[in-house]
Structure formats: C-alpha cells, structure tokens
Length: 332
Image (tube, rainbow, N blue to C red):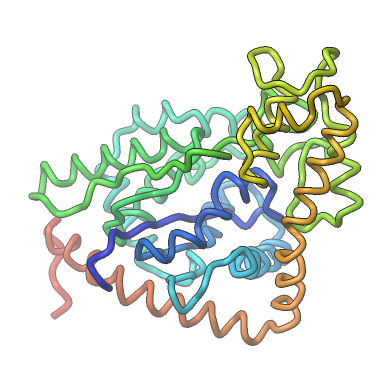
C-alpha cells in the first residue's frame, strides 16, 4: 500500500442496513477511498455472539457484502472481505484476550445491554468480543476507525489494549484514532427519537431500511413521532423534529437555518413528506445496484475470495510478528 493513512471498519450482517447505519457510517466509506487506504469487513464472527439461524446468517452476510458494494465500496480501491474468511482475526484475538483485563470487559455497555436482551445466552463470546473487535483493527495496524458515538467505548478499549501490548513487548501496534463524521453520526428512532435507530427494533415503523421501497419509506416518515408545536426548528426538547432535520440536512446538504426557512409557516405533514421523498430518492441508486449485484452470486463470491486473500496477506505479516513478540516459536 502507499503512504496514505489506513482506515478499518466493519459492520455486522444482522439484516439490511438501516438509514442510521447508512448515514452514520456506510455512506461515508465510499468517499474515504480516495483519501485513505481502506479496509472494510463484514464481521460475521461478531454476529454469532447472539444466536443466529445458519442459513439466514449466510444469506445476510453475502447480502451485506453486496450492500457495501452498492453503497460505493470499490473492490479495486479497497480491501472488502468477510471476517471469518481471514484466520488472522481469530488468531490475534487470543493474544489480545490475554492482554485484556476482566474488569475492562465487564464495564462494556453493549455487553450489559445485550445480556439483558438475551438473558438465556450470556456466552463467553458476548463478553470477550471487544477483544476480537480490537483484533479486527490491530491486525492491520489501522490509523483510523470510523465510529459512531456508541462505539467510542470499544475503540477506547482497543487503544488501551494496543498501548498495554506496546508497553509489555515494545512499540509495535499503531494506536488507532476515531474518525467521526461531522453530520449524521447518530440517527435516532422514528418512534422513540431519544433512542438510536436500530435494526433490532421491534417496531418496524421506527426504522428505515435502505432497501425499503419509496412508498414504505414515505409511510414510515409520515408516522414519525414529533411534538405538538408544529414548528420546524431545531432546539432542545424537540427530539423528533431534531432527528428529522438531521436526516434531511445530511441527505440534502442544507443547514438547519436553511431548513427552518424552507418550512417556515408549513406544517409537520409537509416536512415529513419532504424528508421521506428526499431519503427515498437518495437511496434509489443503492436499491438498484444491490438488485443487480444480487443476481450475480458467482461474481460476489469471486470478490469475497479476492478480498479475503488480500486481507490475509496484509494481516498475516502483522500477526506473525505479534506471535514472535509474545514468545511463540517461529514455524520456520
């Protein structure tokens, strides 16, 4: 690779990406390819920390790969692969687990949240997966990791693990920094706007999926929770409208003042319709390209294989040096 900084990011294959996934992360990944060396990953190993239907997981994983391509990831510019296809992630994970403290893992917010949602399956993987997330990043000595506000804790742990390893075995790992986009970093539920939009939400009207058709998108926005003021302005206490304005601003590039001016004297119905139409039209090329890619499974699998080969070749050099540093006997 050239001397550009390296970005690593991954996304779980647990169903179609939400508008929150798209605006907060995936939409930004394509443009980054011109400025950085980019490595992107479908993290199917993380997905099995909660129970998955095997056939559905396989389908979702390949669909997620195709969706990333449809959202602008160019497999000629970036390394795009499926996590379980690259053995170095699991290999480095064990080393990092042995350099991660129990107390650190027990304080992870997502472990607590997922344990409450899945009380019948609080497994060891669910507890230690932040170490695997660190391995995902450190296997490539990534400089930057695009993160939303809810992932800062995981990146901070990865930084702590890297620093601890460097102190014990000599400077080796790059300590990754967060890359946080200025806009759209946190898109909220349409029905509970104080809560982040999530594909695991039980209420389908709370979530926009990027493969939803135009009518569905507009219908969901029409049902979005707002308030009783009927004034399109961004201010504290107007969580629903603030969320819709954030979405509209991120899609159109208009700032809040311009949006307030555009909808001055108009009701929430007009605003919701405008947001829905803007989102649906913006996502139309993604839906079209995904449909095209989904018809060519052999091409998708060729891309997966090529991406995994590149990722393994890159990460194997780093993981082999880690093995040597901790005292494992070289294979020769």
